[in-house]
Amino acid sequence: MIVLHAVFPIDPDKREEALDLIADLAEKSRAEPGMIDYRPATDVDDPNVVRFFEQYEDEAAFEAHSQTDHFQEFEAALPDLLAGEPEVTRFEVDSAAEMEL
Image (cartoon, rainbow, N blue to C red):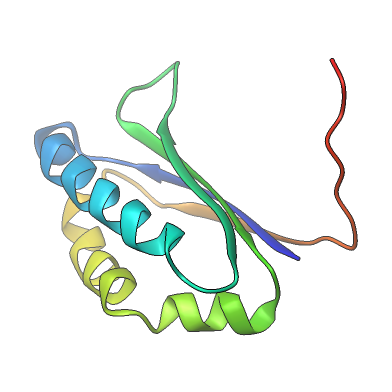
């Protein structure tokens, strides 16, 4: 499984535009084959920071996502929406299990 954690600092003046694009991106991404989960969320400490948590079945699903029209549209718009450098961390996970709290 491939897991991504991405952090995007959004320009406050572009926040609504960014959130609209992100909502569309998330909806379409969740429908992709090989997508386990795709969750953007605003940061509780800074509403102008959006964090993405993405889970893909495998490398093929991850690569396919990056070739979709909705991802490429978002990627093209991103430079105008950012207020700083994004941070992206990729994890390759052998197994995962739910934990009881």
